[in-house]
Structures are given as structure tokens and as C-alpha cells.
Image 1 (spheres, rainbow, N blue to C red):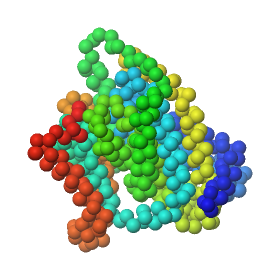
Image 2 (image 1 turned 180 degrees about the vertical axis):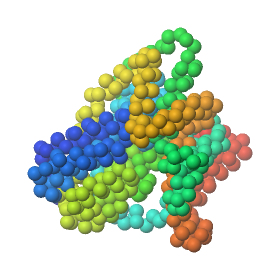
Image 3 (image 1 turned 90 degrees about the vertical axis):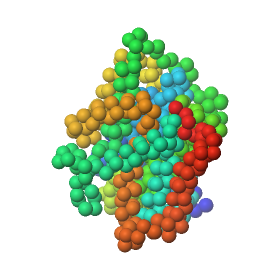
Amino acid sequence: MEALQYLADGFTIALQWHNLVYAFVGVLIGTAVGVLPGIGPMSGVALLLPVTASLTNGLTPEQAAASALILLAGVYYGAMYGGSTTSILLNTPGESSSVVTTLDGYQMARQGRAGAALAIAAIGSFVAGLVALVALVFLAQPLSEVALTFGPAEYFSLMILGLCAVSGLGGKSMTKALIMTVFGLLLATIGIDNVSGVARFTYDIPDLYQGLEFLTIAVGLFALGEVFKTILESDGTEAEMIKVDRILPTKADLKQSAAPIARGSLLGFFIGILPGAGATLASFFSYIVEKKVSRQPERFGKGAIEGVAAPESANNAASGGAMIPLLTLGIPGSGTTAILMGALLMYNVQPGPLLFSDHPQVAWGLIASMFIGNVMLLVLNMPLVKVFAKIIETPPQYLIPLIIAISVFGVYAVQVSTFDLMLLIACGVAGYVLAKNDFPLAPLVLGLVLGPMIENNMRRALTTSNGDYLIFLQKPLSAVFLACALLWLVVPMLLKLRGRQVVVNEEA
């Protein structure tokens, strides 16, 4: 009950008129940041960080820190929602955690159900935001203690489990999915090795020293791949324009989405707590879980509404979960929370175990503002569903240049590099060829995301054990994760050998 009293105090801060304005501006900019591929929440928050200093002039240091954090956090969770819009309408992930939404969201749009997909994304994001915040209020302290027990061995095994599970993300063949996963891991090794400083697979090309930019690969494979498919497979006749008949989801849609939203919210929150895991991993995991529990897994990848509801809920819940290690331990779990931590330090507020006692105004003001911000996002985005859905009715001859322009500007804005533009085109061609031959793209993307984290945690674990690989089996939690990963691969193979049809990997 003490937590509720603190939360009430937080609301008195969050409901001050200037903080309401900051929350609204934050979620508005965040939505725009999410929609534009290439910017992403990390860049959006970083760009606004110097702006907050001038906006908070005349406030006490404590008030200034609370207001700045309310604005920057609004950008963070606003971007989680915005990324779904272009994923659903244009097959262009706005940021990394929206990659999974393209798998079913874009198929729904092609079936004339763009409105329902966008509405469910908004509702799922709202519910997940509330679930994460309620959990944040009551579970911050105990969960932060649990997160501390996760060492490098446990993280390594958890991510191996994620990679094995992703073999069921699509395609007719588990072998092809595993090939793409390994290919993603190989791409992740390009660049300067963080530990030894040795350049790997860079071939003396300076642009490769930083490694391959994740968003360039994702936008190339998904967005430009779809553009090449439209151009190359067009028979020259006027394509039938996709019509969006219904804007709001039906009762059946809501019924189908309720459980995935609940599961995605809880799973996303708990994954968000783990430093380094983040919204991208949460969205992939929630999609895999939904596919496993579904009675009709063959519907996934063909426009299943659960495939939009679950990952969209998970990535929003993960942004709430990521606040726990930041606020209670002073450990940023992602790039964006690292910038938020920088903002706190800029205002002489030290995140960590003493934050809630030393600076309750900042901590509880931020948590309360996230409640308000989530309501603002729902009110802001539900009326815009109709406007967004109209985009899909644009004739292909206008839509294709628009997708190319968004992709090129977005990718170029990240590092201002022409090399990235060439890589974007190469990935577009590769995306078209791979998809045409039924090589699933999602495992490649996840391999690229998890590769550096897997390598870093593996090396840290081996450093602590003096090179003894048994450390991964000696840690109970790590051993459980590895056993689950092995079963995930072996059980479908055994079922196939016994003549059973393994539906999960049989759909197109």
C-alpha cells in the first residue's frame, strides 16, 4: 500500500500542466520517430537530450530532472508504438522491435484488414503499457534482485534458446531457418572485435569497422525486398488496389487477440527487466510463444491477428520492464535506457537503490507520467487509424517511390554513409531472392541482433571460469535454458522421423 501512496504523490507531479505538455510532446515525437525507419528511439532520445536543458530553465533541479525524464521517456515508449505503423502498411519496420510485426501485419494489410491490425497494435500497446506500469509499481524492488542473479552464462544460454526457438518463425524447412540463423550470426561478427581490437572480415574497408548497421539490413530485406517483388513480378497490368473495408477490429479479432496481448505483456515485461535483452528479443519471443500455443500455427505468416497483437504488446511492455534495472540498480538494459541514465546524471540524480528514497519526486513522477502517456498514445492514435489505413489504398506506382524514399532517407540518416545505401540495395535484392526461395528472413535478423550479445556473454562467462566450458552446465538456470534449446530442435526432428507432420514448420 506504501507503493500506492508514492504513486499518488507521483501523479501530483505528472499532472502539473507543464509536465502534461512534456508527456504529450514526448509521445507525439516518439510516434513520429517510430514511423520513420532509421531514427529509432535511441536516436530520438539522444537528439532531444540537449533540448531538455533549455526547456527546463527556471525549474528547481529536482523538477527539471522529472520534466526532462517525462519528455524523454515519452519518446521511448511512443516510438515502440509508432514502429508498427509502417511495418503493417508498407512492410517497412520503423525500428528493430517492429520487425516481427511485418510477418503478419503486412499480410493483414494486403487482405484489406490494415485498420484492424493498426487498432489491435494500438490497443495491445496500451494494455501492455498499463500491465508493465502496474508491475513496475509493485515488483520493481524484488524483480531487480532476481535480475541481478543472471550472470553471463545464463544470458548466453537464454539467447541460444531464443535462436533455436526462432527456427520455427517461418518457412517450410527448419534446415533453411537454421541456415539463415547461422548466416545472421556470421554477419554479426563483421567489424572490430571489442575485446582484442582485431578487425574481422572488414577487408580493409573502413565502413565495415563499426559492423553492419542492423536497421539497414532489416529495411533492405523487408521493405526493399517487397519493392523488388512488386516490380519484378508485376505482369504490366494495373494492379488491383487494396481496399480497407473495416477500420476497427471485430469482436472475433478482439477475442483472438485478448490472450496474446496478455501473454505478450507479461513476457515482454519480464524480458525487459533483463539488461541487454530489450524489446526486439521480447517481440521475437512472444511471437514464437503464440505460434507454439496456437491450435492453428499454419495461420501465422499469412495474416494472423495474434501475430500482431503479441509482439506489439511485448515490445511496449519491455520498455516498461527496462525501467526497473535503470531506476533500481542504475544498470541501463539498452541503448535508449543508457541515454536516459545519462539524462539523470546530467541533472545530478544518481539512479540506483537510493533513487526512490533520495529523489522520490523524479522516480514516481516518471512512473505516473507513463500511465498518462499511455492514455495519450491511445487517444492520439485510435482516431489516426483511419488516416494511416488510407496509405495502403495508394496505387503501387505512388506507393513504391514513397517506400524507397522512406527507406533511403531513414538509412542514410543513421550514419550519413553512402556505403549503407549500397548495402541497403544489396539487402533488398537478397531479401527478394531469399523470400522467393522460401528462406525465412526473421531468423537472419534475430541472429544479427543476438550475435554480439551471445559472443560477449560467452567470453565473459569463459573468462570467469578460466576457459572451462562446463560453466554453462554447472549453472542450474543456464543448464535448463540449454536443455530447452536442445529439445526445441530435437523433438520436431524425432516427430518427423516417426512420420508425424510437424505443422509448426510446414507453413509458407
